[in-house]
Image (cartoon, rainbow, N blue to C red; front, side):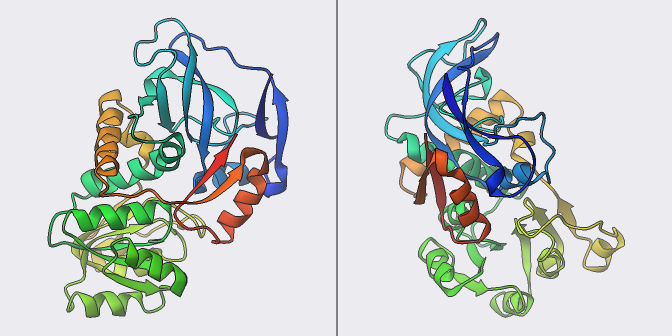
Length: 323
């Protein structure tokens, strides 16, 4: 037997139950991993509450982790027993052991710990595709990053500064402003009531080519107003709730804007893209360009407490659950 946090009905943090489950066996193309660390992400909340539909019930949430391969099924070539691996994507992470499609695993360099790997795969590869593919950030760009003191935000601030960009980080408190600033945000804005005016001041009226918005409903229109003509709005999360239907004419009126709702799953669907994103991430972390900050750890059995902290915006940087 192994242990897992299971959800039998959607709801608040209290619906997560620490239960015995049979140890899974890897089938064709699958690997069994003993997990050393599990990443906490806001998408876990979406699946717990039912905002994102569960594939089945009871449900084991969690889409990021790191550990050691203990067994593989037939036709596995990507990994072998004994490999140190990490993943982001396939649901089922809140468990001490799990089966996962082997082609979704990447090998972790020895210099990177299991906790660091678990804390950075989903957030780090999200930052990678946003900065390097959704919009290719280049030296001289000024960009807006919402939730700049969060897990993805801190990685984006550091990485974008390394690329030569000026980051305007949007945060919810003065404490978080200091954290974002210390991690590469040249400017910080607390709240979004004055965000458009601040962006206008900082850019001398030019506004920005891209806004990265993980907040959703509450900030959507404000984010659009920060964009220069032909600017790109990357709406990649819904921490305040889903964005309501958008009248496309709005994009025309505000300057022929582009709008995208990207996901890591699409950007890493091909094995080659997954490996490229992970290699790019391991490179900047290995060189110290991006420091992964694990500011909270919880025992996996106490995942409910971790969710309460996350939803109350009490967390900064990355949070890891320890099986």
